[in-house]
Amino acid sequence: MEEAIPLDQPRADKCPPAESWVDQYGDMLFRYARLRVSGGTDCEELVQETFLAALKGKENFQGQCEFATWLVGILKHKMMDHFRRQKRDQTAPLPDDAMVEGMFNRFGKWKKFPRRWHIDPQDSTMESEVLPALQRCMEALPESQRQAFALSVMDDQKSEEVCKTLAVSATNLYVLLHRARLRLRDCLEKKGIGTDAVKG
Amino acid sequence: MLKLPKVLNCQAAAEMSCRRRDGSLSYYQRMTLAIHLIICSGCRFMDRQFALLDKAAKTLGSQGFLGKSQQESTLSPEAREKLKKIIK
Image (cartoon, rainbow over all chains, first blue to last red; front, side, top):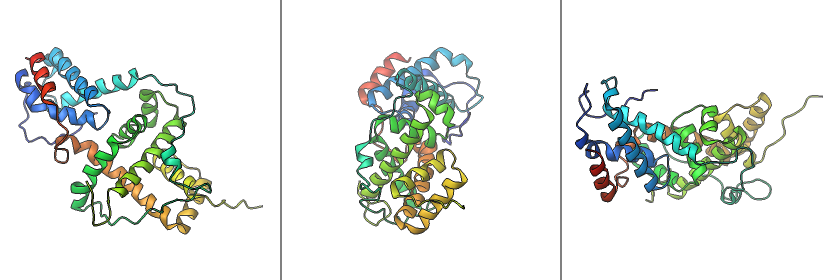
């Protein structure tokens, strides 16, 4: 699956010299990983693994895509391996998420009703306010919810694939996604998204 | 006798609203969710916010790493030096 990456660079048929990789692509790869994997150290290791694999396999790069796209492709594989290394028990019911449970009273009604958000998805506030806030809120999610949300929603992967990668059952994946959305919604609202006062 | 969809509470409506995005709902479930969204404005907002959330997440996933919105997320100087030593 190739993604279009609109980098302002000419399409090169040969890979750029390895000395320039870190400065040119290091931060981009780091950010890609940071959105999906928690722990800065893990992300730095993933970037390192990616560069090492690229170094080994650079003869295979024939300019079939942007070099950056090729690197992201390698990083994706490294990330999937990283997720698979974290062993989970597929079938065990997930522990309760007290924060999500706490959003509702014992009759299942909102304790604090959601407000209307005055946001037009086409609007510039989407990019200037919602995306940075969402990034911070995602970083605050519990690891398993964040991985589930990143792979299923952000990267639009099929749920069967995500279940396999994260080693969770389909039911647990639904629960993780549902909790992630409720937490993200709450977090964005607390940051003032949709009102005039946006907090950092 | 005709079985009428029962009224959901907000917590179950939130779960179903997500389930509709991630998997599929039966006709009966879609109906119970729709009825709840008619009578509950809070959940109606939530349902729209989930749509916005998913859209924003997709945008973040496809462009976020290009760096416009995330100035603070960069390799640490130490990691950068280490990488440069390894990759020559």
